[in-house]
Length: 111
Image 1 (cartoon, rainbow, N blue to C red):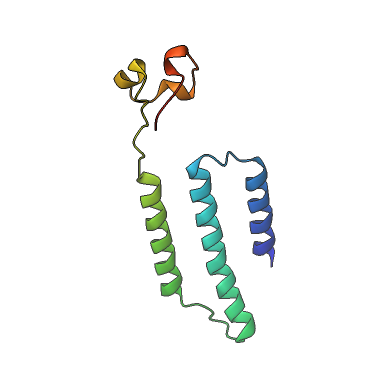
Image 2 (spheres, rainbow, N blue to C red; image 1 turned 90 degrees about the vertical axis):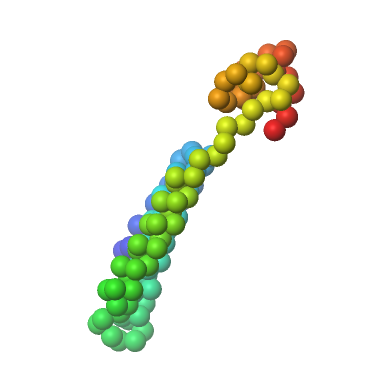
């Protein structure tokens, strides 16, 4: 029960005060909640089945490795920088300047 309370407060605090446009926030929150779900499943089996073993250790380890590997792949994916087709400055730089600067030549970005 203590773990569930910690996960709820962590999730609420993250959703209230974190930068939700940052994908790494979502990745860390997803990993944390998934590991919490595995722990909850283990505790649930221990209580309902009255079995002190719960989920086998090898299965918990395998689930942890799969979750970590999937999230690692999600974190390593890079999105290509968007460029503005109408702006001459954006064609020479790596990212579009239209997102940060509003000038007359950059008024209509086409993504």
